[in-house]
Image 1 (cartoon, rainbow, N blue to C red):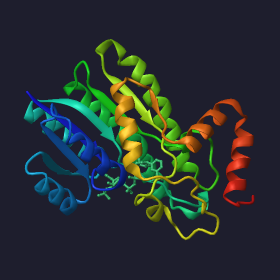
Image 2 (cartoon, rainbow, N blue to C red):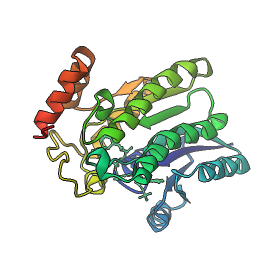
Image 3 (tube, protein in one colour):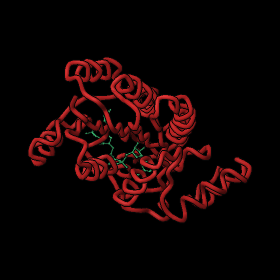
Image 4 (cartoon, rainbow, N blue to C red):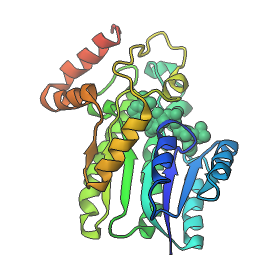
Length: 257
Ligand SMILES: NC(=O)c1ccc[n+]([C@@H]2O[C@H](COP(=O)([O-])OP(=O)(O)OC[C@H]3O[C@@H](n4cnc5c(N)ncnc54)[C@H](OP(=O)(O)O)[C@@H]3O)[C@@H](O)[C@H]2O)c1
């Protein structure tokens, strides 16, 4: 049976870094690159000399995730790693986004993560690893990044509980909670809204976040947080009232009610 890795959001940022790292794993024979940008994925696959395979899909659409499931069934594969990195946020108030924009964020960030996991799990075995990319934003309700932060709170909680449920099968689930990263995320999040986050404190490159996340996943850790500032924020969010954390976020972003 072919040993593979599936990486969603492979065409950019953190996902691309995971692909780079997984290419070094000798037991991973093929990496399936999932995202919407067909040409980018094809170029990546071509450049990998046959190690990667382009799987262009919009994961905010249920039927496409079912297609991925059919492809896995047809190929008789064993998935060693599933990295759910596809996701995005939008800056601004509730009224700056259309209902469709809000819904699409939920479809990709929540349903996409859950359904991709569910179609991949039948092809995983003892020692397989799932890495779900949540965010430091998962720890606190965030005005003006509200829906995004709420979707990531779902991802973190869902991943932790799934990790417990999958223990008897020897499969681990790691919720990765990065702080700000220098990827396409911030440019894509801009809506032109008057009130938006503008301060990207302690921003890091995605390569170090991916490397730590992969190490943590191999060690079966439930949560992966990279860097001093994100670790401090993560710890503070556990200890301090949510109202205080929200006020700190608003102050840091120079946002007034
Ligand atoms: N950057 C940050 O500051 C930050 C912080 C914390 C957490 N995160 C999380 O990290 C993950 C990776 O984001 P990033 O920072 O690497 O941003 P990015 O560079 O914008 O990458 C996002 C990836 O998601 C893919 N994607 C977007 N919509 C999709 C869809 N409908 N179907 C399939 N794929 C889709 C994009 O590819 P296509 O456009 O080709 O579809 C791209 O590969 C996300 O889950 C994000 O929420 C980011």
